[in-house]
Length: 287
Image 1 (cartoon, rainbow, N blue to C red):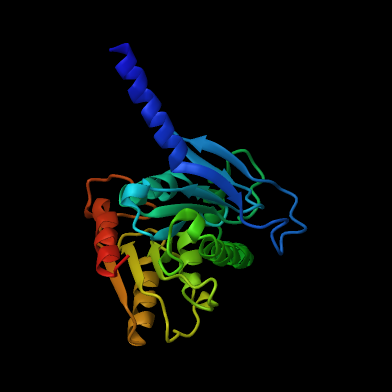
Image 2: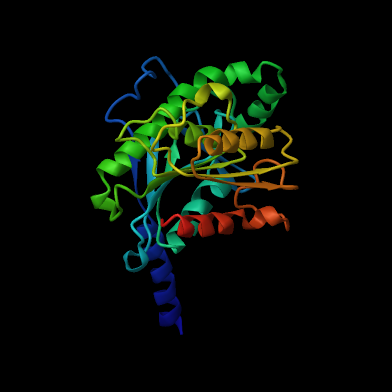
């Protein structure tokens, strides 16, 4: 019995090692535009959930599915956190594992964030968000984060064969601030960094990040809740309206309840199953 238990434990350890094979620096040196940044990547845990902050050196954490069920699709995951922190559990690793279980390769992006000056960056962020000028504070933080999203798509496409995925089946999903990164990737792209699909979940989508809808606009899947205390349901509707007015594909889910930041959390609400609707959409779109 002890030998059987030991074998089972070894199996799960090996599976865990294979699931996250490596962490890749997104740039070969200092991230362009961050040459004067003096802080370094840090992480801590709040209520059992890992949070990363002070990200000045962007990385991609690779999660690959069992090769026997691999679909050839890859998805870059952008956690949210107001451009100051990154919530790595409900908007990162749990999403990656869900994708892996369905044969999809996942790449969690730690994009650049603003500097937190205390050892409690989540509390510091909440205090910042109370300020009426919070939108102005994060405005200069958006371009480097968006640049990291585009660089991540380019990297994954250039290394598609290495990860057993197709260069024409690479998407991006983002939550909250990460949704800003994902939404922006669907505009102003090049052949190398164009996502084949984009997903935004309770995303902050200010008008300035949206450009003209291109002829080869990627399909979008958009999720939000009406009772989002940040009022981001309207951003979701505006993004959907912009895409569909140009006669391009988009699917919109607005839930009556769910708040903000639900991600993969279970709240005994219909938002608990948004990820399944995303799975339906992936299948319908051929990914």
